[in-house]
Length: 244
Image (cartoon, rainbow, N blue to C red; front, side, top):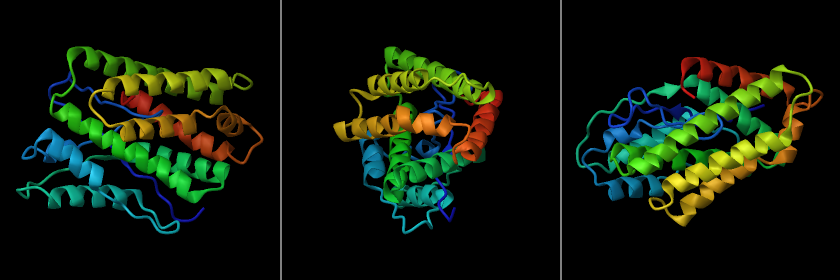
């Protein structure tokens, strides 16, 4: 499988949240430490910077690290000062996303659609990181964020269990967990992000929560078995590390 590498996820410790709280998105995890470099911008300016960044991918020469770095450079070039920023890139999460991209590409037969799902994930994750960094969420919304993280953890554990224990996979259970994650995330950002961003959230969760896609992914005789093995290996590491 040539060349595509999904964007590497960047985890941010948000200083004003609970200690060691890593906010996670998707049935893997969330970025982003981009928000650390935005101290000289207003929250709206920061969101605008994210909204307008554009990363072009040609053919399958699509590098996750390049994608993240181009986004960072685009943001930094718009700042009033050239503050240095350190971006912590989690390789395990990146590898999981790479596998999900390959599954999506094979399942849909559409490289552009598979790339768009990953790009939508990155854009939403960075915007949410900016909102956290600027303390835009109320106490009630932070409780929603905690509920989301718990549901995501449940999803990861369920995905691993279905892989490890033969004949236990239930597409309805997995789809419902991902739908719950989607709804919690939409509730969290309801008053903060635009309908276009809400659409991106729906796009990502509805794509990977497709019962037919999940059924093929968990079919022990399908071509997706090696992808699922690597996905669950990565998820297990993220769970053990306390990331999700």
